[in-house]
Amino acid sequence: MQRRHFFAAAGATVASAVTSTAFAQADAKSKSNSMQQCATECYDCAQECDACASHCAGLIAKGKHDHVTTMQSCLDCADICRSAGAISARGGVHAAIVCKSCAEVCEACATACEKHPDDEQMKKCAKACRDCAAPCKDMAKHAAHA
Image: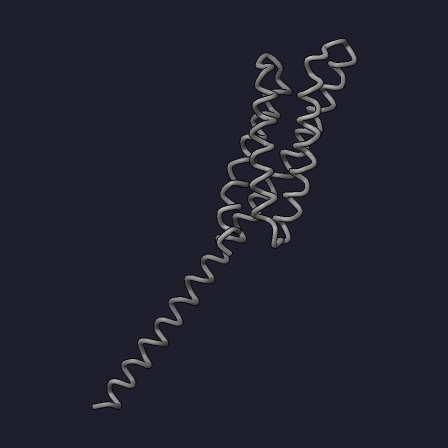
């Protein structure tokens, strides 16, 4: 009788271990996908912000000084996006912190660009920033629980 209980308990333990391993692997894959999605969006956003900053510089040269703050915001956003992209791509230990900050900077940059609704370059930049903020927030949640 005790032998039967032992084998039943052992079987349950093995089943639990296999299930836990499967869930851990699925969670690791989800985390990896989140990090790669974040990295991709970050690099795309950095490129768009660099283009927007260059666009703003041209407008400032033409006397449109209301673009100074937007240009600075785009430059800051491009820098943090490149950093967050690199850290996410390699699964860095501080990814959650950096990506949370990146999402906040992207949101601020999008808001700055949206102050110029008739400018197509600004619209593209704002969209890229919003598109980047969402996976950064998602990735930060996954990485924080790692």
